[in-house]
Image (cartoon, rainbow, N blue to C red; front, side, top):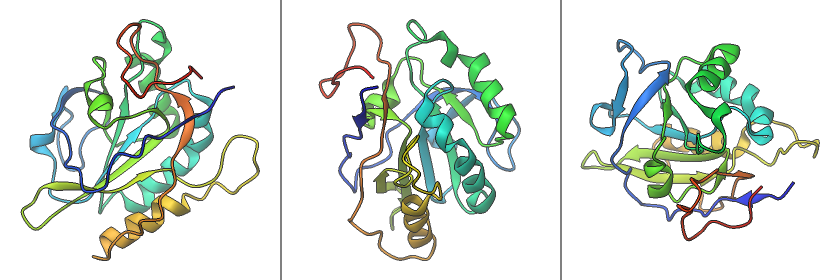
Length: 205
């Protein structure tokens, strides 16, 4: 299996605007909605997770995503985003995403980026991939961390503990700067619509 690394979007980038359908879950304290916009997000740190239902690298980290939600879910807004082409990978459609969320009892919003606009705005490359934003002094959500959850990969026997992302989350929540020593995530490439691949697209995984 070929591996695809993160492109590592520059730190300090603003959260892109988006309005995407919600296929599972809802914002904490809000009624379930059919769409979610960047305009209605709470003013707290925001963790964007590019994941999907079928990827073995995502399946490997699912237990830690559940632990992250349990540990940080009252202080951080978690958003799961699936951007894979439903033309080539229909298993990552709404039914597959809902099944995945129900299986792991995820309550955070799971959004379908069917047109792949948010993935492209984030220069996403692989699943899973993580982006941590937090507000600046003007309230704008600014990128503080991007890259891997930790060094664990299927079969490499490195503990799945989320240490890289947890360190960034703890720093943001404590008002401390996040370390610049950030490592790319590695996984399956995002399945772009045929003929609409972005410039950073490499060999398929």
